[in-house]
Image (tube, rainbow over all chains, first blue to last red):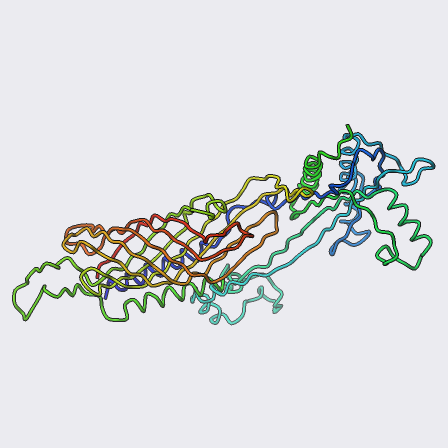
Length: 256
Length: 229
């Protein structure tokens, strides 16, 4: 009989070991960073000489509102927007293109326009471990024994945080919620003439949007997508690294 | 988590079933008869069966070695075997295996027009529940080599990821695993010993998304504790 008990215990131990094996391997935040480039293989980039870039990065977010602290931080001098625009501009200058400050500068019609859009979103999830309820019967005992936690002396407020009896509160083992923020940057190179055509159309048809069936299509010749999770302090640095990677992976953009 | 609870439950159930047919005893046919003196027969060393708990170290083969080249240090299995005659056992097998490989950040060209740069990883897990059969050629030896095979359904998770994007397949597949091993008792009279050997595993899965066109195959060196009963 003893032997069966031993075997049974071995198997129980083994099953606990197995249960803990599903944990993922070490992954750092930067490991999720992704850079994707895509281009029109038919297009000859040496026909382009001049470019125009928007003065700031467009921001789409489900947690940043225009004018709030994050928004101001994003658009401040030396902030995310400025750093991204500077980095992209520098890459085009290094590749041999000439920057113009307008899409249509008199006789100088810019060859291509560059736009950058950043999307910053927040997700929340909750993980609940029912195993903690089953695994630690002592928690049940403690929980029912106290009934409810005591407030600080002299107060009846249930909001009091004075006594939680250490970590014995069953809910503390029961699960955790987590929040993570994702970010991605889309950089697009559109043909200058197609951008001017679209702007002309939108001015002529103020009630129609760029998605209208009659609106001229923008001709994209190159795009980059930089994607990852946001971390504490190195987000801009990581985005800039992504921009560098995107241009490194696009040698056909070089002028000479 | 659900999966883990299920796993624990199945493992416990499996143990219960393994011993449901009575208290394991060294119930050899010739040891005691009619209250007379103990007679050691030819098959004195033949137990009723074995119960094994193994650690498995795995390495991939075939298409699977392109998917994951790293060894697996995460593999466990248990099995029970019962002699149905002097040389053959049948029983049940349960095993869990995890393979993982993380690739350094690099650029992958996707057709001519697209590049993807990132850290990739490939993951493979399976949980197998099957029947086994073994052949023990040496009855009179304390050290008992054997050949055998396990067959049965396996629940697998195969995943390939780059950046924070992945594709994953979770499915039941069929698995066949021939093996070659040996039981070595801790002492001449011990009914506990070491069980070790080599197992080849083949899972009937094919999917070009993961570059697997001829099934998932891997070898395992298993080593563990074996209980005779």
